[in-house]
Image (cartoon, rainbow over all chains, first blue to last red):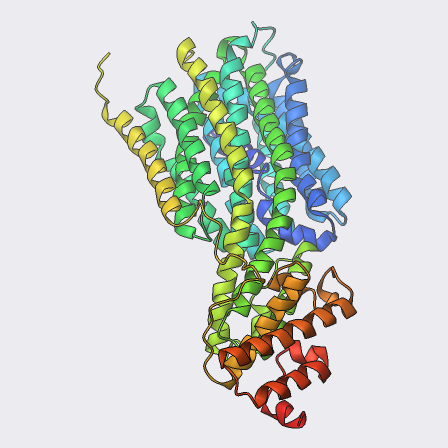
Length: 451
Length: 152
């Protein structure tokens, strides 16, 4: 390896991780974006969907021609577009501009991810080593996204999420231009990618299932349970931690066992999230750990199988980038309307239950009705996009000095959280269905013994 | 191929079993049932034993809400949330709510007298208060001894 190759490979791995993390990195910033741009839930969801759709479409389109292009040129072009779009996202003054910039960022990310594969292979000295580094960087980037975004949002604001990406892209671009990595040229025409159909289908379904663990779980913890982005990031970081912890186990399993075991664990963890009876961090952490374990077992093996070296590393890599993000987009498209339908109805039920708790509490009548009406106001503001402060109506009526009112407040907040937590159930079950489908497809993987 | 699980496979099996354990714990914690409380039928009497003047008055007002909700074919909670038009949609116009509330409160006073929760001489005073006091004062719990004395 040339001197400096290791540093360049590390920089590129960081850029790959960020491009994968971008699929979910803004989840924890959604409430802030919602308030900043005074928009709808559907509107703000496009900040996530636009990026993933752009990566999927660009990735799938690139499959047809990427083998004719020079890998380093594709990478440099991707880094340049990604850098410009990340800067534009950080400076966005309107939601439509941000969504547009996120779309361009997705195009840049697809080019970056496709071009990074052959360059990493050249830097590491073999296609297999390069593919392994690319796979690991991508997997950890994907599962670290929400936690990373949460930390940046809490420490600075949502713009920091995009501003922090620009230096990584800029440094990588300068390093690629300076190093001019060799061996990353035109791959030429290679045989069909049909052999990668099963692992890619599994990966698409597993990434769809990840919408439950990465997006829904984060929304639940932040917007329903009321944790700060930093605390939310700490809770969901159990997922990447479990993914990392299970690496030694994955190496000791046969490939089919790792894939089916991983898909089953992801499905099981999502069922665990679906069945959360209340706002229980302990149970959520257990379920997220199982999800992370599932990802750590299945994704590396499937990624290796999807990167069919005989069909061309760049081509097969580009296909798997497109399919993974297609899985994310399909899951987002099916889960978002389900959630949008369930949550407001659960909000109405929660409000009625909260009023029942209040009316039956040992609080004076002069406080019951006013607090109930103020709570309704807080719920109405929540529908308009604000994160509801359920304690405020109680505090305004003296809960800080009235122990009975304070106890009623805690009881009532628990009732509301438990009721709305259950509204996420169908969406979590749908995510689990994606993982269960991956498990079924993995049976084909086992039978064909692709691994 | 050996039929016995190797250590790595055994760990995977243990992890899968832990999924089942998690689900079992969640079901044991009530995941399958609707979170409490269940909204009560306002047309059925509640089993509450008030102690003291304030608790008795509170029970009369809450029973009054129940009576009004029963008349309007809704729940006590939905009725309470309909009292302030500024905080959400209102299903009934103000005169309808007021008529139902006064009727419900009068019925609650009758029931309290029958149960012996209030002395016989207080019941007519309360009825007069329910008929004449501003409805907003009644529903926000502004009934005190001073109001009763004022209604004499």
